[in-house]
Length: 259
Image (cartoon, rainbow, N blue to C red; front, side):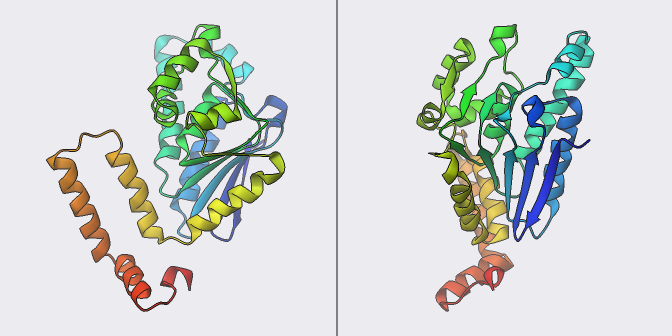
């Protein structure tokens, strides 16, 4: 039985976690399905935005109990291989060529925090709760940490990695972990508004803009970075969509990707 569904609607792909009975928790099989789903939608030319959603009261509760029972008996080598699959899933989401939005309708715990952090944008219901609970069971949020720390910042990570406190959606907004907090009945409208905004951009420019953030964030502003940004704007200006976008603006008409 599949742990998720994929729905295509216009230029939007929605990947929905569909195991509310286990709070959409991970297993190695679920990780493989999520990885494959993001590879599939990322490769489709007709997709301009990807929404990651979930059914039930929880968005994702981290590792499921059966998987944790198996992991308890793993050797170090088995743990390395297992953690590598989770790391690859997060990398595939983070580097997806299409803009990604986490639609957070419910609680997010442990590894689920990595799913939200790996998406480009996150909108949360004001009833959602968040928790990096790993230290309570003698573990650390190691594999998800590159994405979570980028999302919430090192200062907040120091607190929530160490205390394992549960925090609410308003706190998630304050520390930058999510971009917007709305009432549950407004959640779809806000996600739809972001999808609409994303659909108006040049597909090529959207891919390049996403790569730009990944390449520039956290880097020292030196000659190498400046040269890379100069090359980036020169390349996009010379591209077919770049030329079309500028011409359509000057001619006061819609660009070809909106025609």
